[in-house]
Length: 582
Ligand SMILES: Nc1nc2c(ncn2[C@@H]2O[C@H](COP(=O)(O)OP(=O)(O)OP(=O)(O)O)[C@@H](O)[C@H]2O)c(=O)[nH]1
Picture 1: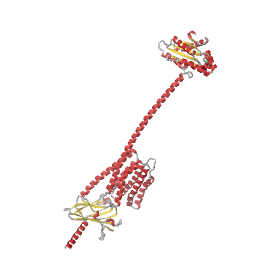
Picture 2: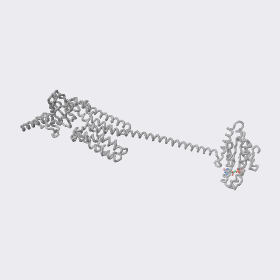
Picture 3: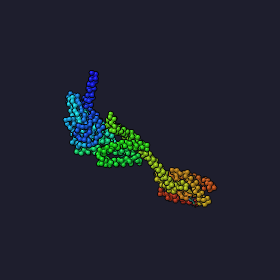
Picture 4: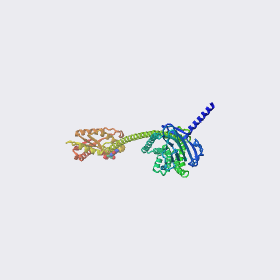
């Protein structure tokens, strides 16, 4: 009895296990039911099943050639009391030919079919079906050609659409951030004319379009009969992504007059990559051409790291900051590659990881760009200040130079005026000054006081001094006599050298008496001169003088004074004679 009970329990248990493994129960209409791991797979050479296929749980264990068909089947049961509309979803597909059936309908689609001929066509395929009340539906189908990735799931249309809205919001935020960063980079490029910002703008633009494949879907809608345009646009954006990434590295790290490490290699690589891509496309096929830049992404990261490290060692300031900014995108790319190569990290959503990396890089880039802009503005302000300071310095230097030059000019003018008005030997006013003083005296005189006194003084026997002691000693005697006369010079009296050893004395505002007294004191002073060079020999002088009554009398007055002087000489020299008395 116990054995029978045990046997029945085992039978029931194995029936339960069988029933659980045979189908998947759809219980929660608010959840998306993943089906990939519940599906069974088989390979055949035809689209139709022969019935002898070997069905397995793991499709990777099957060795399929591209021209063979990969069949799948999965049974979904419902425990709901009413029929439930559902979508059988093949998400994130990269399948050339795909056929799905729910037993009632058959849909044909896939990347290789022209856009307009696809019965189901969305970025992710959704096949509408109905789960009958308390019954099951078996979804079957096959794939053919190049199959890159797929995931089977089941959910109500409401659930899928709600998820799409969430994704769209997330994508729009991402797209907005990228658009802002692209615009910012363009603006900074226009403001600074630094090519690094243009490269960065192109890089962001290429990344965004590669990520969203906007061109691809646009081409599919506009030219549905040429599905290869989708792939070509994808190729252009992914090649542009890699090339612009190199562009960013070269231009950001570039310093004036210096080549960055590996610049030649990078440039050649950038020239050749599109050509290699086209060659691979034409010879080995588009699939390989599309994979080429993806395969090169890893070497690109290594090359970038090497270039950044070397440039940092060479003293580039920007290299370190650039490395920090690019770190999230590098790390997330690395995760993307690891996830793609090894499915064990299934908890990581590759797309979200990569997006997070790009967004973080964008944030870093915005911080670095803003920091750069602030520094640039500060630099400009400092430069402006410096220029203003230099200008004011230059102006003050110029002003002081002008002042100095003006002073020099004034000095030389005064010197010239002095030279023109003074006798170089005796430093007394010269004959020209004597004439000017006479003219000025009459011009300034008012009323009846148009009278000036004129006297001519001549040193006695001066020739003798010259002959006895030499011309130089004669000069000394002349200077000493001139010094005597200079002491009498004032606003109203001018004693100047008239020529040779003859001097003239002009006085205004002075009556005869006072003038005579002045001449007398001059005469005495000359007489009293004691000059060692002539062994203290007495220097005598003869003076003839007169009063000049007006401008028209000037010539005559000088003649009179000269005549009086002559008389003085004749009368034995060393005396003062008034013209009127001679
Ligand atoms: N050392 C010197 N001698 C001068 C200068 N100008 C004129 N003489 C000299 O002055 C002398 C004037 O001589 P004279 O005109 O013959 O008259 P004097 O010897 O003074 O005799 P009297 O006037 O008749 O008393 C000349 O020998 C001139 O060469 C001068 O600037 N320096």
